[in-house]
Image (cartoon, rainbow over all chains, first blue to last red; front, side, top):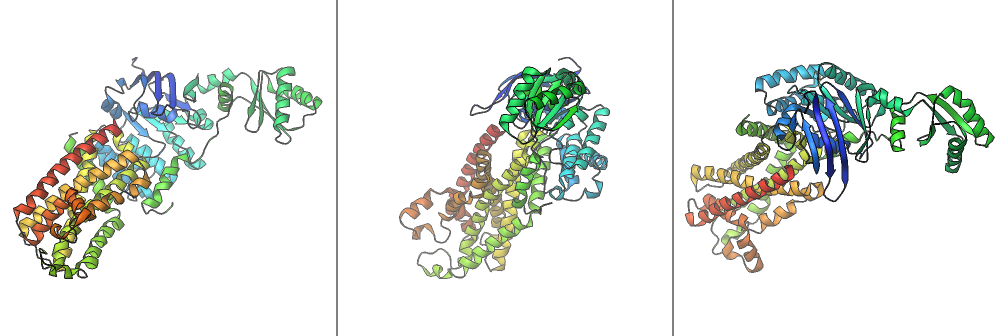
Length: 339
Length: 254
């Protein structure tokens, strides 16, 4: 493995007992210092891949090395070299935040004294010093994510795996988390993150792999991926949500307008053209001639949404708050009040 | 880091988690107290039956109250483990570069400690109710050691249930499995006074041999004829359960 790659994945396949093929022959690598994003909808295979990289799940076939170690033959060395904050946040709700971190530290080989010092430093870093003595079960969603991040950093790993680190967070907490992650990456930590939020991938990542139905459908920097979409995207919303009308508009634009691509998006049509402002009058004229009523029309530079749409023919639907569902479910069982 | 050190830290964490749920501790104590109150004095007339081995019924059922608390301990351990599995914390422990058996050992040792503390409480309760321990101080220590060992064995059963089913429903209802183990015994009446299928079931139930051993220490003292079968059943059961739990754990965490 070249020294500069922290993660190397070759022809990885994961088939669950029962036959579900979660990951299909994927290849990718993450170079040292990179901020790498795995972008895809729920069930795309992101978490499965992440768990295989972290040694929590056995692969069916393929080659996976993390920090130069094979995940099958040297799982302990792999675990020592990574920090992992999971989607189903694995926190000890009955422990105080400080105690949770200290245990993480000693389990990763720090002495009790080192662990205490490191826990205090990290609590300060993620802004939780004032609640360090409170039980984790009483923390808000944002605080839970931050204490989980701190836990993943206890042993100062060079490589950090984050599985949907901001799902279910309010915008303010999300921004705070992004700042923490930016700072860590600037400090030299290689980060591999999964997300289904385009904005998150665009804001944080330098390299992105788009994964859908267990396959990587596109890979590159956000800029290059967006450039590949080609030109601008004109969003066309028709009056009423009539499927037949949309189909008619789609056909008309495909056959008679000078467009690169027409796709159905969440709220209308996404029409890819070379020059958005020049294309708008032609599109409006064409639809008007066919008696198709236009309600709204806007021009945008391509986003990662458009990249995903181009490669999969679908849009990602973000399902908010999935990360906290398990926690919420457990709360009544443990006699904890809803936060 | 040595396995012993890892085990110690996980053990302390589990102990703290138990202490952090006073309702769990209180309910166990209350359950045992109810056993004494509901079955002790009201059924004390049983001692008049010819062939009954003791004239103090509270002392007779002390063995039952002790073993029952330890048996149901297994169900509680299953639920604690499942809570960790569902919250993702169990995965977090597995992610640490530790020997994974220290996680298992930390959990089982904690169960043993828990059983020991519970039984200590029950013995204090029994003493307050006037029960005399014929086995003396050494007998008390032997009962505590047996409770700790048996607590580990029942915890193994609980662990297997949680690991294999991963289901809140099944685990929550695992007391249905522990119930016959606890009640198909000589809990209320000695074996000689039992009849029919019940007597057969009692003779097949390993828990009863442990119960007889513990009770003998309480009501008779060091009568080895009654204690030794319990001792061997305890040893064999614990070895079998530890092997089965280790196997299940290895499969689930491989």
